[in-house]
Amino acid sequence: MEKTPKVLIGLPTFKGMKYCHKEFYSRIKKLTYSNYDVLVVDNSKDDEYFNELKKEEGVIVMKDNRKEKYKMQVLANSRNKIIEYALENDYDYLLTMDPDVIPPENIIEELLSCEKNVVSGLYFNYYNSSGKLKYLPVAFQFITDEEFKEILKTTKFPPSVKSSEDLRRHLTQEEVDSGRLIKVKQPSIGCTLSSRKVFEKVRHGLFEIEGVDPGITGEDAFYFHSARKEGFDLYVYTKIKCEHLLEGKYEKDSEGNLVHPLFKQSFRH
Image 1 (cartoon, rainbow, N blue to C red):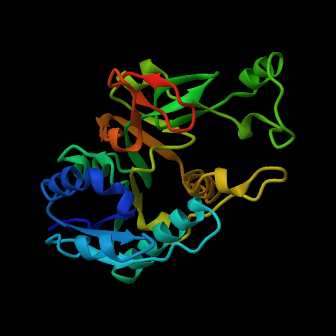
Image 2 (image 1 turned 90 degrees about the vertical axis):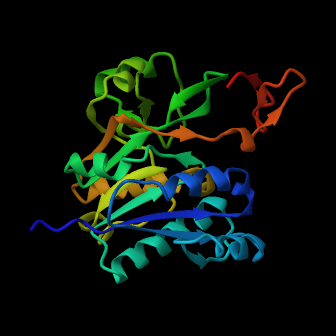
């Protein structure tokens, strides 16, 4: 009889994510796959949310600190803590989640069916693109050398951008709607399935780039870049679309539109 792979769902969190607690844990307990566990690493400054999480039935909860200089390093440390747990407890796959990403109930079976070492589902977020807030997929494709040359004609980049490898683009609407398995530069970290072959070799961290604040480089980009350096191709299965609960992250204006806390621009959800 063929073995059913053992899957760990792992996610970092903190008490600022309490707004989506009910929706996330309600869905995660309804997943239809037969052999998975859930590990949550709380990196809140105090133990209030940690104690609340421990009341969730069927969820393994661990505590992490929040002492790092950069928020992204805190996140990287918590994700690495999850990887170490997965290795120590002999999991075949790790499904990295974010606590505000609500997956379809069959996400594990669907991602396993792709038979890839790194594959994610898809969700959207708001990005500041050319001075405007746009609702775009959290997954990125390679820029070709030809595209890079064209971009250079109209855009001046900092010294850290030297080639097409230093840039990326969001998936197009056509790619999003295709329902296909697509090879990409960077999948969606909030719903990424990695095989043991990957997390035996790859960890989360921050880039050290001259002239660039490491706190903004992104632990997800570092993980995927490291995986590609180890020879793993990365994929997004655009058939699997997750809901992204954004309302708790943004303010609202007088008309009820969400307002981005950094750009103070309104946009409709």
